[in-house]
Length: 369
Image 1: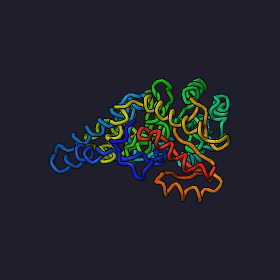
Image 2 (image 1 turned 135 degrees about the vertical axis):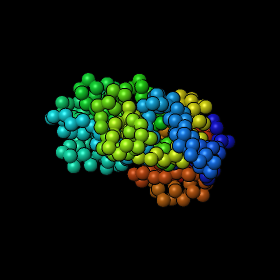
Image 3 (image 1 turned 135 degrees about the horizontal axis):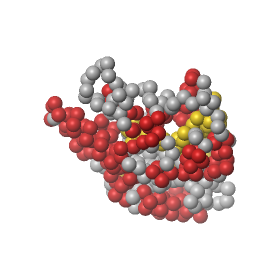
Image 4 (image 1 turned 90 degrees about the vertical axis):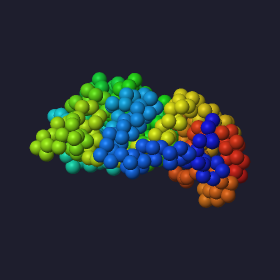
């Protein structure tokens, strides 16, 4: 679909679930939005740097079905979750936080800090049941404060019904948080349509923006109810007021900014956001799913450990092999970039993969299945 715009290590790059490939325009984007203003702008540098971050939010917004003013860039997903957690209003009787055993560990680690302030974590069983809205019923009880769901699960590639979870949570008076880290850029994300209270994600994976430009999204009405503890001068309604005795939360998502924002990651991430935006997530999704269908159609029954059904899977896959170490050695010799989970070969497809990549992968894997 578009290989020429990326640096692709190895011969066949299947690691977008871990780190999206680097756009060739990253250096220019970093220079334009960060380094050159630093050298030249002097007293006006913050105007330029803040415009860089505004451009990043504006470029990201259509990729996640959002408005730019509802997005606050973060250093990583964990930081975003922590800021959300410790911003929630106290509500009598709502003492539980519901998540699943299949969430990425950083989600659980960050949410577990809620035990410090009296919350109980409830883990739903993982697996294919997470695609069923009814499996989330324990999250919609009157003792639940927050439910956290993942749009595309990291290992299983199962898609949680984000919109339905958000709708049922809203009806039950439960705050909802959707993790879109393994979806954004490869699977359509429609935050305005789904209307959860919060979402988090990262530029690192299918958005091809590198580390450091994660994001927190929050509904405007929800933000107005929340008071983040992790604040700084950029959480202030007027960051440049400079009155140490006066603090007033910024409107909307900006109140989650905290202290001095990191400019360089946002500048670099623009390179990936712009390429993804040029193609459109819907078109990338169709491309990726066609490649997965080609792969799955050639594999023997039982070889795939992750979600296989069209419309119910992300862009990642786990492939069972008889001996992972032997398979990994042959994959490395063939320049197939991958990693492993659960003793399986872990792969993902993206806009820079094509049918030749799939066929080369199948040829190497065939003796190991």
